[in-house]
Length: 140
Image (cartoon, rainbow, N blue to C red):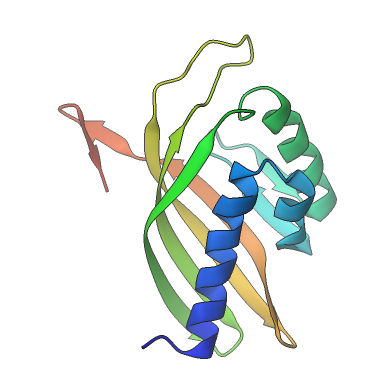
């Protein structure tokens, strides 16, 4: 049975996907600390909650407007009582290029670094990586 903190971190990871799927960029940004870092799959590095909100808003108006993020396996490791790392396998469908062309579904792994402040868990860092495909099979 998960501990209260495990359940709370798992909930933040689930909320990330839920808010992504509702294209709630304000809600997505609210999951992060004010000084969070976010590295996306192409290596763009965003600094702070305000920039994360701005970039997410821009991307969800075109590329991710109709996308759906599905979490697979989530593994949580606590580095201390107030710091956890969650590795999350994911699948993304419905993405489009900036010029509107459909992108095939893809998979990857995200790293969510969660910190506890009082009773609330937030994301202090996030990094997203596309899975490597070997022989047509995604590797995770």
